[in-house]
Image (cartoon, rainbow, N blue to C red; front, side, top):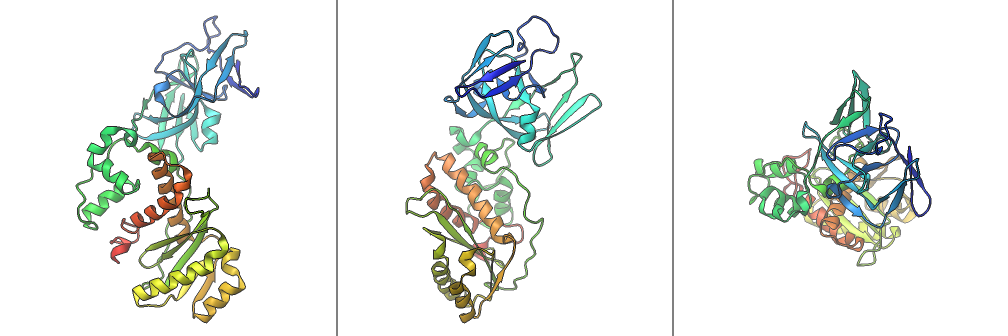
Length: 376
């Protein structure tokens, strides 16, 4: 057993070789990996596999016999199993003088991976329950495994020469199935044929980490525009270029059309809603019938309730977060993170990115419509 000590004396463990010999405990095939429960960190000697690499996070690995080797940094890694499924492995230590690459089971579990063990085989599944790794028990009672390091097309210059990747970027990292639907269902004019690539976008895999949805399906109760409008506030964020730290969104349930407004503080919601109401009612030629929001204080104030009552708007306050708006806001934030990271922009540009994401989503396919929201 060895320990890792950094400048703050934090510790991690890496297993010795399993045969008990006097050899260097971490000697093996450079391309091979081992699934291991005895260590507490992922370790590799191949720096070219790592993305989001941080060379400032250096540490020293100390063996039981007092020998030491240097960890020069830490990064993430995109892997692809033999079945083509991909996964993001985060927190991989780069150790040039260690030749056996180790994946720590505990670290994988912390990130949402699951494992099954039986019939001398260990299977590793990602957060979406897709099989990504399969390791067979070796004669030395270890679990060796091999996989490919996935390409990162969104950062490669050749990406712009591929129509699918180019439009993926133009549409704010919209998924390839969505792009394909826009073309195949004639929702948008001017799109070329979109062939779904085998490799995933690095930024999408990093910043669109899967999480359980609020509901498998959200039924549409509205029968026309502005019958039901959903609203939610997101933030606080880093101060934007315009000095804003929040944004409020409004989603029309019937068309899934979305509007976003940046705000400096939450108490601006009423003023923004009044402005939004005046614009959309004039455009649609209809009145807002129902406003649905969560129970946040910005929506339950006396002034807000009085305004809704005066305008004949039924204000439905749900005890939980509002599914339609929460889902759309989650999508907007994922797109925002991807766009900022793709172009290496500071977080202060989030306001521009959120507005762009909203614009793109209003011209993108949705699960419940055969048209894009802008065309409804």
